[in-house]
Amino acid sequence: MLIGLNDRRLPPDLDVVIAGLGPVGATAALTLARAGLRVAVFEEAPAGGAAGRDGTGSRASTFHPPTLEILDALGVAEDLHEVGLVCDSYQYRDREEGLVARFDLAEIKDDTPFPYRLQSEQQNLVRIIADRLAGMPDVHLVHDARVAAVEQEGDTVAVRVETAGSAGTGDETVTVRSRWLIAADGAHSTVRRELGIAFEGMTYPEQFLVVSTTDDFAALIPGLAQVNYISDPREWVVLLRTPLHWRALFPLPGGDAGDALEPAAVQRRLQAVAPQDRDYTITNTRVYRVHQRVAARLRDGRVLLAGDAAHINNPLGGMGMNSGIHDAAAAAAAILAAETGDEALLDRYDEERRGVALDYVRVVTHGNWESLQEEDPAERRRQHDRMRRTAADPALARAYLLRSSMLAARLPEAAERPA
Ligand SMILES: Cc1cc2nc3c(=O)[nH]c(=O)nc-3n(C[C@H](O)[C@H](O)[C@H](O)COP(=O)(O)OP(=O)(O)OC[C@H]3O[C@@H](n4cnc5c(N)ncnc54)[C@H](O)[C@@H]3O)c2cc1C
Image (cartoon, rainbow, N blue to C red; front, top):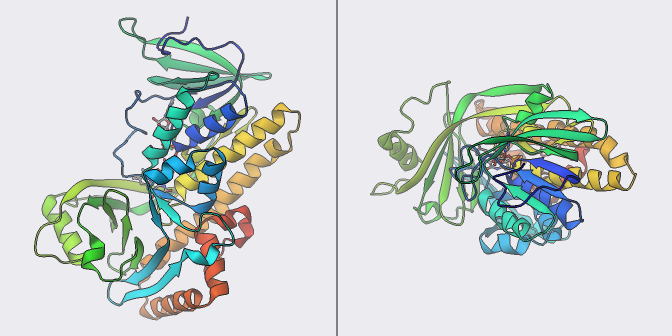
């Protein structure tokens, strides 16, 4: 018997089970359901609860052009724009020198219908898609349901799900069978662990501090763009506008966050970036560890790993969620083709998506981290000169924007550093 499923019984002939309703699981579910497959999504958080273990809202907030193209094809881009902020340029700055280079995304207007970044919190996408899924007859969206174990038997994947029972019935464990499983259960993926897949890579030496404020950095720093990477050998900072606030990202050297979250310490940091004669109004602060890790394989039989379950990276460049949504689209396409007897995409899924994670996302985001904190003054000058030359030359600027906006992720070999 199945309980805790909003009075909906799961059919015995499910096509796809998805573990996790983050942005990646949600995108995969909507793609497959729109194509007519029977889909069940199990999410361990309660309905309307946190989108993710931490769910504080300080996670991804940048949607790059190719991601908007995917979401547009799914019919959800318009709703996302309604709760988003269009950001058509960004800047590289230096804490001492000020503006180094400004990139205008209009340079890629012939490459994409969305020549900008859309700033919007990732939970907005999850909510928009969950609302769509709720109205689809062949989709079973089950909250308070944790995927706990996985077994493959021939053409079937058996998933053990621990669900919180409906009122008064207590918790229950059920086994659900389907033809495919997409593991979109985040960085701590149970499915990845169950399959014994290593999560190879490294942890950065510093932690990252994110501070959200309702004060307007653009009013304090003349000419500031909505997205700004500001280098400094002692303390780089990223300033990013979201629809509701500004977000500042700082490195915290050493393994210990110390007093970084103390209100006075947070104020000192912000005042050093943009002084004002009163305290900043802080809406959220958060310290977190950052890793670069990629799963040893993204496919195990009829199980596909996608999003943070498959790879995690530093947030400099806003590529984690975006590449995860691209995985979701690729995984769904591979399953849909395989259902018609064509397994070519399925065979390529691991190599292609792992390739993007390793040779593109990792290269670009790690390169961003290195250049923000360059200590050698001569090398810093060279970097700044390179950035200025790149921004001033339309062909170089376009090539650079294709990389930073992830449009070049369609061509992994293009993931080099700026000329
Ligand atoms: C502090 C922070 C800042 C970040 N900033 C950025 C950024 O600026 N730009 C960017 O692109 N990315 C950023 N990221 C990364 C981005 O948030 C992730 O890449 C994105 O959330 C990945 O989506 P996902 O759906 O794969 O995983 P998640 O969003 O983690 O979703 C996984 C879902 O699975 C559920 N779940 C977990 N285990 C189970 C289970 N066993 N059974 C059922 N459900 C389960 C979770 O509750 C969750 O809802 C940031 C991440 C963090 C932590």
